[in-house]
Length: 211
Ligand code: AP5
Image 1 (spheres, protein in one colour):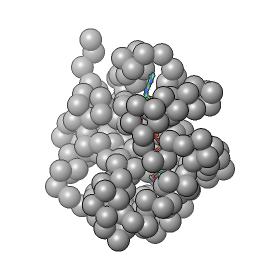
Image 2 (tube, rainbow, N blue to C red):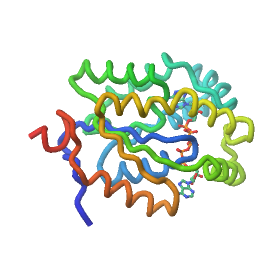
Image 3 (tube, rainbow, N blue to C red):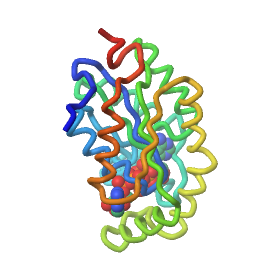
Image 4 (cartoon, rainbow, N blue to C red):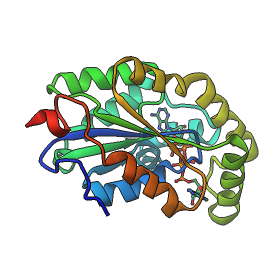
């Protein structure tokens, strides 16, 4: 098997992107382990805040249960603080962020202050019928608060109307977007990601150009 092409000494900024249920969390954990990037899921951060019943968590829990997006300023602030922590300094894989073009612009501004930029996007593609099946199954097995029929419908709507445009934002900016078929076994999907990641990252900060 080919070795990961990412240079572990670079502070690589990647994004795992896709609709609800596309496998961002599942594959993000594998990418973290294989490529030594800190997997930073905004959904996980918000659920942790909600279970601790912090002020942010209580507000976010209501919004999440309805399948809506929490306000951009709130999530931008959480991500900015998280990106300053030492455990993400060798590289990060963002999961669930950015979710609006405004968040993508805010992320670019945060990274630019540090001379960095987004290096790549892994975009998982899964038909909506399969997404809904996965989330309904998870509702039966785990009972996540936003895996109800109504919340799933709303999450899909938010994805189509607000989030999908983020991919074009990155394409227009010349960021490497890797489209990955997200159907099939978890291992099969991960193997597709591994193969796509084997190419150089065409960014001034990552891959071959950095040396
Ligand atoms: P978030 O936690 O990001 O949820 P999501 O985008 O709806 O995605 P999921 O976690 O449901 O799915 P996933 O793509 O991670 O797939 P997973 O691997 O879990 O966000 C939740 C909420 O937080 C948002 O709705 C919003 O309210 C708020 N929020 C978060 N970030 C925000 C932001 N930036 N701005 C504003 N609001 C924000 O897999 C899903 C299921 O499928 C699992 O059961 C898994 O086991 C299964 N599965 C995965 N891969 C496969 C496979 N290949 N075959 C079969 N089953 C599979």
